[in-house]
Length: 583
Image 1 (cartoon, rainbow, N blue to C red):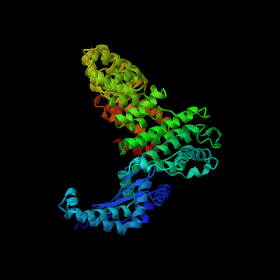
Image 2 (image 1 turned 45 degrees about the horizontal axis):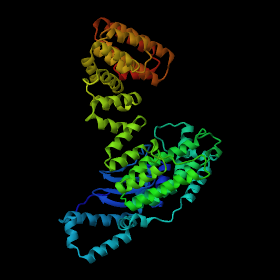
Image 3 (image 1 turned 135 degrees about the vertical axis):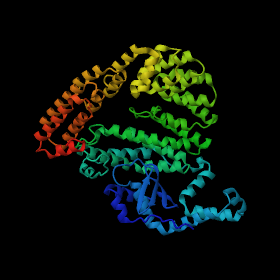
Image 4 (image 1 turned 90 degrees about the horizontal axis):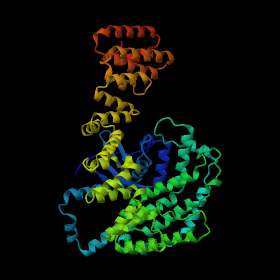
C-alpha cells in the first residue's frame, strides 16, 4: 500500500491562512453541517460544501506545504469559508476518514472486477445488508435513494407558501440598518484599500443575503434530493416575499443603499434564480411532479390577479427559464400550454416558453411564426431565427440580420461576419466588418477591410476609431501615416498611453520626439514630487535611449546628465532612472 502523506490540518493553520471573517463564516458552515462526502484521493482531502451554492474543496499536501483550493469564486485574501469548514470537519473526523479512505483505496488497487461483475457476484442478502448500512450511515445517500424510489409527488410536504412569503417580508422589513457600525467588521477585501462606504455596503448586503439563507439553502437541498415540488414552493414564497416587501418604510440613517434597498433585494433574487435554474434543468423529474408544479405556479399567478395586492403580479418574463426547465416531453408541454392559452399569456413574457413547446411538438410552422413575432425584443430568439434561415433562405437571413444588427451590433457582429458572404450584400458586409474590427481592434480584420473595399474604406475606418487611441496609432503605423501620428502625439501628450503612441515614430522624427519627451518630462518634474511620478517620467525618458540617430545622441546624453545634476537631491528619481538604464 502507498505511503502517500496526507495534509496535517491544524486549527492554527486554518486561522493563519484565513481572515477573521472567513474563519467565522467557515466555522458557522461547519456547525451548520454543510460539509459532506469527505474522502481521500492520493495526498488530498476532497469534500463537498453546500451553503448558498454547492462547491468542492480540495486540501493537498504539496511537499512541505499544504494547498487549499475551492471551486467558489472567492479571491479576496486568505482561504475561503468553504475551505475553513472542511478543515474543521477534518479536525473532528480525521481518524475515521483516513481509515475508510485507505480501505477504499486498497480495494480500488487490488480489485480487478468492475461494478457489474461485483454486483453479479454478490448475493441478494449481501446487497440488501450493504445498502441498509450505507443508508443508515449517510443521510445524503438516504435522501437520494428515497427520491429515486418514490415518485416526486409522494415527496411533497405540507409546505404552505403564504407563511413563507410573510416570513420573508418580516425578515427584510425588519433588517437592522440603524446599527450599521457592525458592517465596519466586513473583512472581505478584493482590491486592497476599500472606501468606508464600500465596506459598509458590502457588509450590509452580505448580512442581508445571509438572513435569507434559511430558505435558499432549503431550496437547494430539496432540488439536490429530488424534491422539486417543495423547492418550487419555497422559491415562489421567496419571490413573493421580496416583491411585496415595503422597503420604503425601512430606516437607513447612514444611506447605505441610497434609497435603493428594494432594488438590492430584487437583485439578490435575480442572482439566486439565475444560479438555481440550471439545477432545475439537470434535476431528475417525473411528469407527475411537473404537473403539480405547473398547477401550483398558475394558482399563485391567478391568486395575485384576483387578490387585493394591487401593485403586484407574477412576472412571467422572469420565470421563463424556470418554465422551460419544466418542459420534458409532450405531456408536460401540453399541460403548460393549456394554462398559457387559457389565461391569455401567449405573449412576449412567455416567448421562449412558447418556442420550446412548439419545438417539442415539432410544429415548425408555429415555431417560425412565433420566432418572427418576438425576435426583435429577444437576442436569444433572434439568434435561433438567424440559425434557421442561414442555410435555407439567405435573403431572409440578411433581412433579419440587418434589423438585429441595428439593435444589438455588439452581440451579433462576430456571428454575422462569420455567416455572411460579401457577394450577397456588399454594403451590409462592410458595415458588419467595420463594427467587428472596431470592437476587437483587430489589425488582420483591418487588412481584410482594405483588401475587400480598398484604400478609401480603410481611411474611413481609421477615422471611425480615432477615439481608441492605441488602435488608431497602430492603424496609422500600418499605413505608414507617420506625419499624422506625430501630429496626434503633439495634441495628446497627456494621454495615458503616451509611451505607446510615440514609440512608432521615435526613429522617424527623432529630433521632434526628443523635444516632445524633454518638454513633457521637464514640466512634469517641475509640478510633481514623489516616487510614483518618477516611475512615469523614467518610462518616458527610457524612450530616449531607443533613439538611434547619432546626430542627436550627444544632445540626449547631455540632457540626461543635466537632469540628474539638476535633481540630485531627489534620490528616488535617481533610483527610478537607474532602473531603466539612465545613470
